[in-house]
Image (cartoon, rainbow, N blue to C red; front, side, top):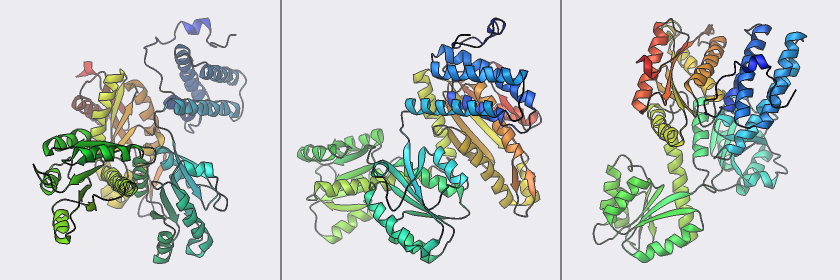
Amino acid sequence: MTSESTLTAAESLHEPQWDGVPQNWPLAAASLRSSINDPTARRTTRLADLHNQVRCLIHRARHEKLRVLLGVLNRIDQEIRRENEQGSADLSRLNRLIRYFDRLVQHLQKAQDEVPEAMALYTGSSELPELLEDSLRRSGFGAHPINLENPDPALLEHTGLLIYLAEDGVDNAREFELLAQLKKQLSACAQTLMISKRDDFAIRAAAVRAGIDHVITHPIDSARLNTLLTGARAYECDDEQIAVLLVDDMATAGIYWRKQFARANVRLLFETRPQAAFEAALAETPDVVLLDLYMPEMDGVDLARIFREHPQLNDVPILFMSTEERDQHRLEAKLKGGDDFLNKSIAGDDLIRMVRYRAQRYRQARAERRTDSLTGLLNHRAITEMVDSELDRAIRQEQPLSVVMIDIDKFKLINDTHGHPSGDRVIRKLSTLLNTRLRKYDGVGRYGGEEFMVVLPATSVETTVELIDRLREQFADSAVTTEGGDTIHCHFSAGVAGYPEHITPQEIISAADSALYVAKQSGRNQVQARHYDEE
């Protein structure tokens, strides 16, 4: 038997036709794991499901020339055949092979991923809470333990987030002292987070003295945690370029500051005329605007007011730059739209520090405004904007795109029977499932009320239906404890549509919503797809 395939001649006649669309390997690995670990399915059913999936994946791996994955899939296929013939009590060997396949897929994904994994260090406990671990993975952080007494400098160099799991609270002064020292060794853009079992003034004061940026107490609020992680990932500024718009009527100012900013990975947009500056701000969306206070055509205060009146620019940090020394004039300038006032004689390093600080705060605030307060997922505006941007990418790259509308079934009855706090628990339960079981670059948002939207780039409608259906089963199997202590099981309905069947964001969202309506009318607790020829 060759290493190319374990399919028999008879089976090869029924291979699916190659459609030219690359396989979504992370989803395939997740599907294999879900199938073998499904506690509700009989052993023979699990093996049959795995066999069908593996046969299709062997076909895909061969066409994509992924010989390493193909070799492991062949071994899995052989093990499924052996289990069908001989059988074992726990499918342990097959489980190990699937876990090995999953690790290879993760390695392949990292190699292909345009965005490198961010580093999150944690200390104070031997293990991360499961909710924290899932949220870190979803936000694109790789979690690594660190010894406070002897930290590895190689880890510190690329750290974007430091997490302190406080067990003994404020009494452990030595650990807070070490945290303060460690904070100084991290990048200025790295964030620090403490998760504490206590919530009082003393523990928060100790955190502030140690330089810790954020404190979360038990039980962990998943919405706030996800919002903080989103913000932390949004401005890893040492390695990520920021954009600054400088408006000054003196051309020499642009020449001087362009050289200063270039060494700090800051992209400078320079304009001498107010109208050109306004147009550049709309086109480039800078992280910070530097405005000369006195210009012949229009002074900086009036230009700042124009910026503040535009919804796209109303919260961008504006820093006035001038030789103005009169406090009253400075105050008036800030009251009319500026965030700060800097002297033109400021040293280059100091201006760079100020610009980066303002950019960090702006990016964090922008990330937090895009999240839903109850779940920590993207809010309605952010998730619908993602459909637009991902559709543009799908068209450029000639890749499929799927959009899913999800609605919790009989949610009003849950609220009426168990109360709105219990309804919130159900919403958070589903949001956590969606947020931790999908890829970090998939979009998951709360569309409104008990309705969610999922955006899956480079994923066909057929694959999406299979994935969401497995998540539907997992959600239905998991219990939710109400405020009154009762245990309830909930389920959801979902509709799927995508590109290239639909070619505008409005069409895709409308088609997914129509498919959701069909799922509801067909009895709920199911996933339906909407294709172009059905409309």
